[in-house]
Image (cartoon, rainbow, N blue to C red):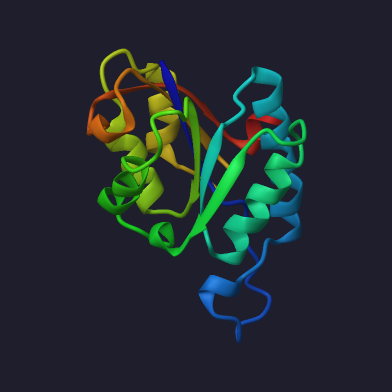
Length: 172
């Protein structure tokens, strides 16, 4: 059984209106939330073999703070513009290209595409409470965990089981 972890970047800063969206860094609240999620992932044993991370500043910073809570060398990462503010089908396209050797994959991206993909993937056996929380709102630094019985290339709408949905406020 594979695991797919979808993580929305932590809260970003809007302090500098001259910055392009791609260049926006994390806000102080985001810098606090990301390590909380990283520690929770480590405590639950949800440590990815590989991470696909949007190349935007806020997603790279989120990944660095989250992965900083794991044992050294836990995960390799690829930073890509292909999932920067991407549509669900484009994010899914990137996931489908991941090596078959990867058993646990983390994707760090943006809404609305990430949230829409999470909703689309949730199929039979999904935890109803987790799905309800996800549908209510996929806030910054929230993490959706899926169990995937297929290979990455076969992943499609309704083919994964949403088992958990964690928000930073759940860990406070």
